[in-house]
Length: 252
Ligand SMILES: Nc1ncnc2c1ncn2[C@@H]1O[C@H](COP(=O)(O)OP(=O)(O)OP(=O)(O)O)[C@@H](O)[C@H]1O
Ligand SMILES: [Mg+2]
Image 1: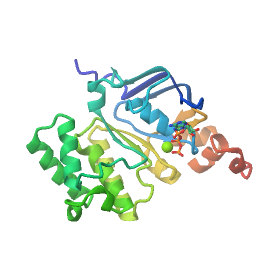
Image 2: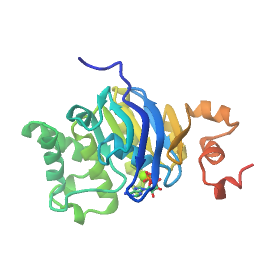
Image 3: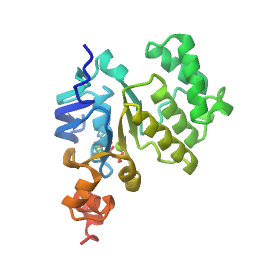
């Protein structure tokens, strides 16, 4: 029963109120088609990371529903489909680069040999071979980010979620990363990306959702959004829609 007709993500009435009363997601509806390269854009505090955390079962949803390729988020089947590189590096301080990757494979049910081979590949792709025996706390910020990305992709997920993947990474990795992610996308992997680099989103994402105050404000292709908001580029669309007032004031 392969659910290929299902969207990668179907969110209905997704609501998250944190314990302190903050309403981070406000009955949000969103569909991310299978096979799309999807951008989720919005200002600091808009609810992007909360949405992703809800989908990946890292936080408890207050209300609503999240389906991953038709499966309830949080189930083993749903979790196995997803590879996530979180915004905040969360690496085990006691594991080396190589161990981080191999153990992750094991955690996702890969055979030891397969996980080891895949770990080698990922260290190659993300240029981490020289650091293979180094523990996470001794990696530079950008190297930690590389390891997060390598780990997210290790088990060959159908849906790759990247929360600000290029924050703090050097230009070389940025190019390398996008080349690799584009290739994955061409092979059928669904990509969900958040970024504050709007040119990056415009170049990469076939579809874009703008999020503000825990709700989807608009959702279209980059071209569709530019037409609708009579804008020359995505940055103008952003400033006209979801940007906080202090920035938008400067834009006629
Ligand atoms: N653990 C938490 N407890 C209480 N409030 C939280 C928690 N995590 C996030 N929030 C609040 O929820 C709202 C949405 O935060 P979220 O991290 O989802 O935003 P974001 O769109 O990812 O922003 P950024 O671009 O800065 O990463 C914010 O008001 C934030 O302060
Ligand atoms: Mg965030």
